Figure: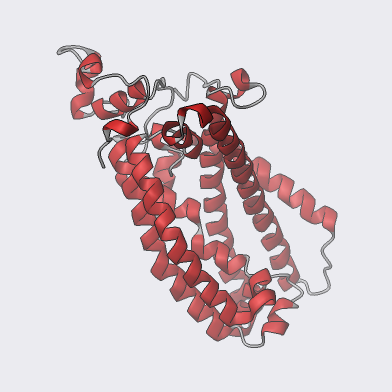
Length: 334
């Protein structure tokens, strides 16, 4: 995926200008060094006019694992399909997924191409700036940046909401006399937000290792050789999720039984209703739900990480209020 002349940034820096001198610290990056970035990473960052401020802890496998987790395709489908079942039933849920994947494939391939040209944590708003007509660059890039920021903040809110609500669903399974109150759900969601934020804050350096254990495009400034690894991670994670998602959905729809009963389950979640019917026991239902809950927590941790990097990148380009504070990187993270 080469950068064509017409797609070169306006103030591009030539390779000769940034090539490392022999014997310098930069020369070590040609073969990879202890801080994780390569010569090509330096070249990309310099060409885009960005300063390397984050440690590059991610490699190919951990990047694919991270992107697969942050997508959370089949996990979110399993836990958030109530509206789909209400609107179209089991058939509508299946065919909606088919068309969604068909359309999203073209989006992913396009984004991967742009990520190979400009691997920056800014993602879409940076690419809009690079490829938009010069006279519309600022407006379109700023608008894209705010839309992306709001979307990612909403994404982490949904993840936190699901974690808190699934916990309440498990309580209902174990105590059928329990009636969940809104304030209880709110407190659980707040606790989830604080807990997941703490994981990212205190264990950020171990995030890549965690993704390897649990086996984006907003993390390219923390990925070694990002121009190659980021687009590969995006494409591989997308296509790896397809068979898992359809396999789960087909099994789920065959086991759901009466859709109306599943939707009206006192747990609030049809998938917990399916677990109850399949296992016939409280312990079995709780165990299976805990597995899904742990996966949702991993997805949420990944989402928080990606969202924070997107916010950092937009603030670094002075797109946010209090940009100087939001874009500040502590010494232990740089």
